[in-house]
Length: 131
Ligand code: THU
Image 1 (cartoon, rainbow, N blue to C red):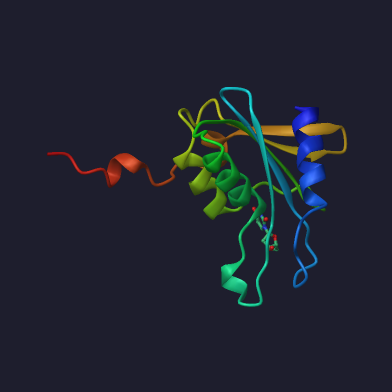
Image 2: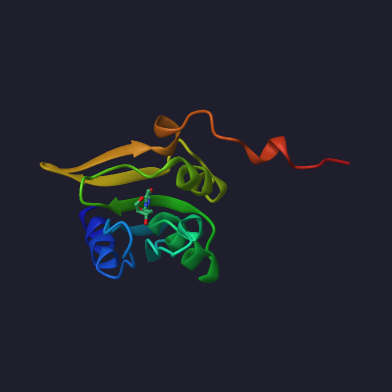
């Protein structure tokens, strides 16, 4: 997990955050063992900002992968992903109970499963049409 945090730290250096000056980096480990990174990308129209986690997910999808095993996120205050990002992570993991979200801490890192962080996310079954 320390390696994944290091990848997220590298991604944080590429963050484009001229408005908030809050730099975020994320790194995803997929179930097949590949790593994809992302940073936050802000916009003068603030609502157009994309978080680091969702930027990493976009890279993962373009890399042909769809199953998140773990996601590390590095911020200046070691925060966990926001609600929109948790919802997006949920879209691309086969098991929220196994999907680990990792953030650095003073003693190394903290890990929570997606299920622990967000037990009541909107599930795709709710909107999948059946015939
Ligand atoms: N941000 C992220 O990149 N990830 C999160 O989970 C929450 C917030 C970014 C968005 C914005 O560029 C900055 O942090 C301040 O909110």
